Every structure is written in C-alpha cells, then in structure tokens.
Image 1 (cartoon, rainbow, N blue to C red):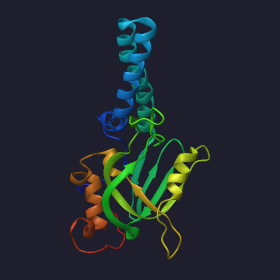
Image 2 (image 1 turned 180 degrees about the vertical axis):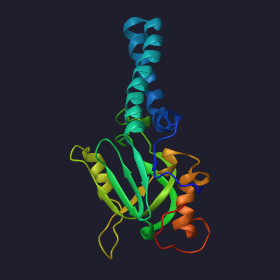
Image 3 (image 1 turned 45 degrees about the vertical axis):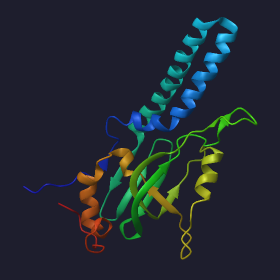
Length: 208
C-alpha cells in the first residue's frame, strides 16, 4: 500500500512562543510604564502588581488571537501549487512554476509603528514574526476588514513587471518550523526540487 502525502496542514503546537517573540520589547516597555505610574499613585506594591498583571493581560489577548490563528489558518498543497487560507478571509495562492525561492518570510502581526516617549530615545515597536517559507509571484485576496497599515504594507510589495501579479509569501515555518523534514518538504521536493538543490520543475502529477 503506497503512502499518500496529506494535502492540508495546520499550525503545529508550540507556536505561541514564536508569535509572542516580536512583542517582547513592547511588553517590557508596557511593564515599566505600569510600574512607574502605579508606583507614583499607589506605592511600590501597586506598581509591582501593575507591572506583572498588565503584561499578563496583554499576553491573554495575544493568546486569544493565537488560538484563532491556529484554528483558522490552513496551508493546502496540490499538484498545482500551494495555498494559504485563514479565518479573517486572507487567501494566498502560489503555483509551483511561479515560486522563485525559499527564504525568510516576515509576518507582521500588529502595527509596526514604534511607541514611546515623544522626542526621547526610548522607542519600541512590534517586529515581524520570522519564519522560513516559499516566495514567488502569485495571487492574494485581502479581506475588506484588513487594517489600513496592513494594506499599505502589502501594496508596497514588488510586482511582477510581466503580468502585474504581486510577490507573495507563504510562511510554512509558521505552520511547522521543521517543514523541510516533513510532508510539506516532500511536496516541495516532488514539484520543485530545484528550490532545495535538486533538478528543475516537474510537471503536475499527484505525489505518493
């Protein structure tokens, strides 16, 4: 009996730490602000409690967003290419022949504008969640409720001069950090082994 590769993949366990990492600087900054403010108005005990409970509350909000992302994000492979869907309505489609490289993908989870003291030297911001994925010329559907900063960021991405399609990326490492060693890596080796140092593009036929 031949083994058939799975077609759909969801985020593996342990991804919350990867999502929180870009927010660490903001959480620390928030804890310091809470400590100072509540120390002034309520004393040292109130300041310490606020510095602990405030960031914990933000972590709770982040965890709620993470569970929605984990439950609703699906990467789907087929003989035609790779697609990414999520509950918000984002849809990215990338054909095998249109993948240009495997590289680092930046997934910006929140507005990147730095926050801090105006005119001061302390400014912190939320960086992107970095992972290894596939990049190329594809199709992208943006939901109507996507925030403005996200639309501006996506609009600034390169465009294929031949057909106007945007450069899109699917962060396979956000789904599984070890995707190259698993079934997703087998899909890539089946249809685009050249991306991993093998021969060129293979014509579509389902892998076994």
